[in-house]
Length: 379
Image (tube, rainbow, N blue to C red; front, side):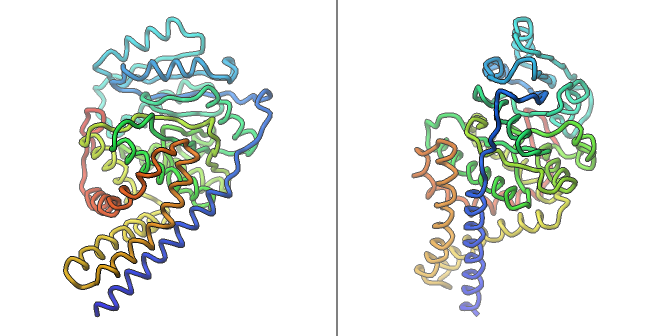
């Protein structure tokens, strides 16, 4: 009986090896789009929902003022969602001296809304004049060619939805490196799944989609009651309507950088919010994939417990871990190189040790309802 149990774990984890090598293969197949950047004509609206981000939104607005993309071809709409700090003052200061088209929308907090970020984006879309909607967050930084890269991707590929690369700012602490490695694995897996024609994950800090397509697929309808999913649910809908027209932008000019969490409480809240999305996926394939990844990581926890209980020898337990770890190390290392995070490569192993417990924990905790986001309790 125990031999059969071990063989089952071995086969299951072995299948994950081929899954990871598949991710590696599809990542290598993604090509950076080419276009004559000087001839780009796409009209862009950048939408930035913010709440209590007085310390960071100014840096992002400075980055947008330094874009190489023609200022006449893009506008920026910042939606201030009932901030209680100095965010409104910072926005007013920038608006008064802005050399680009900058609109500020202030939302009050009286309306009971279970998805404030979607509400903010929807409010901005009502005033957007661009054909391409680009979204990011108020705590992000972007390079000078960010919009140029996005426009080039749209015009050279005909993409209707573009997922861009996201990573963290400079790492100073152990936890910064661990988050960079873990986050890079998610970005890489999302990119590879898009390349495979089965879009699964993306990140709202770096997205672009046609405004007309957003309206065509119903926008956030059917998931507007969920606080999370302004990114992935929309991508799934666009992919269903326009197969092959969802693209990952494998272009270092398009990398968006955000701030790693320094508080375990904030990290927990964010990951719980992310994990809560999978049970609401509409596509069977996407839901099954989420369950499969959870089960494969949980298998390592089972193997370890089996070793502690004396059911399996430690060499048998070690074999299961090594089978899973080696292809993961290869894949994540490649993503880190692309994101210019070579210093974080030595931290892949610690993440691999912790990850099965991390995935198992959040996979279970996501079944509970309610979490806090930007000082708000949401369902």
